[in-house]
Length: 547
Image 1 (cartoon, rainbow, N blue to C red):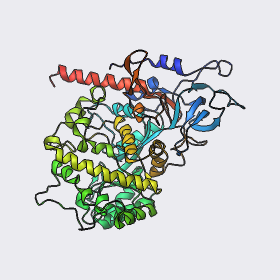
Image 2: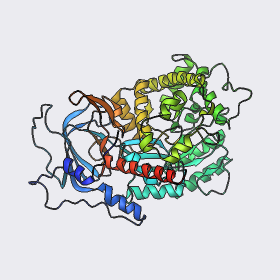
Image 3: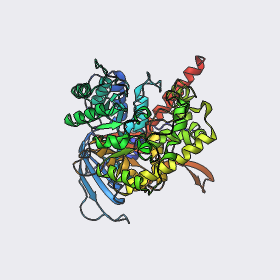
Image 4: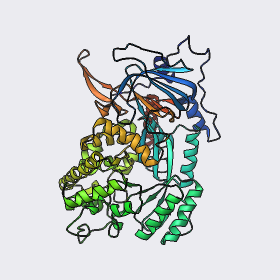
């Protein structure tokens, strides 16, 4: 279906209500003063950012606060500059206002019939630029994320360069660009290379590991991403990270599991696991290693992912002694799981992921080209993907999701991340797909929201400032017109299909309406309209150029 791009002015006229008796004659709509970041960044802030305001009042919202508490209506929320200063229940479900309401503000949003949630936090992201898989300027990536309510992301490895990512982080924090908050994690490869950061040595000893940590800490990194270095190096890096105040996460390469599974890393003090690597290996009982075929080649993308689908088959069954012991120890260690199921869904159902409806208008030409099966492209594995491979991954998901659900039920922390960019996953959209996969795993809708907000904030170590809608916290929030607890599909930028009996036609409902980051209000639908324009223009240029 086509999408008309509403003007920003018209959308503000409809939703933002100026109460004449309470508001000053002139509304402040200027963003924070920009620093030099290039014309595009300044233009985007001028065009899409509104605020922060001396006092912004959101009235009559249904509040889903991120803690797991049930929704509450009607609620007024007051934001002063970038802080939440009041959260007040102002009446009952019949719309009767009782008691005093918060005073009016410089700007107000009438949120009657809308749902207010904390800003979503992506605990595993990779920023895509025109020099990477996206092939479009970085604003394309940021707009997709903000357009889906993502107000914070963890860039797992800072692949565009650690110093570049830190500069983007600082520009976002000052609202010099339109972007989510960014946590810049430095990356160390399994063979000791300091990726995307100028460090003069291969990190092959514990002391060199400590030196690398101190170097990236001095540069301004927010955390560390490891890939399965030797155990002594891993332990030293994690320890030095804690000394420097840097949390650590790990994508445990399959080449590293012979010496260390994810439970071993958790014992060393690792803060969270990315994906699933090392988890089934910790649950193998009848051998000490996965059962690799004799002709296996880790550097072969098909073999890598095809064989990975068989790992959980080798793991012990739920409820077994080893299953219980591994889970209990992870819980005792206060370990966090960031499963990123969406990025593996092409392994389970390739045709579904390949033809996701949002690709037509939102996937860049460069993304689509990268995802075409190619042995040189990470995750582009379907040049011989079979029904048997999908069946193995289907069974993989059953046991994996069982572990995630039980871990959560026993008090474990599962944070939402998406790792968009590989395997037909698209920023923003695939993050919402992760919500659906968590619900399929057994999470209640409120538990899914908590994983994307409060628990993700805890994983990043920012729970004092973000993750819930509470007085004193930073004003990162999402306003939506449909109830996400009824259907997470309504959070997609494409919306959800509904049959309208009066019109005798199918229509689309939903999508994020407003994304608020640091007290600055963004029209999410306008951001996504700009994404559609960028994508259409790039595809048209490629066609005209014979690409």
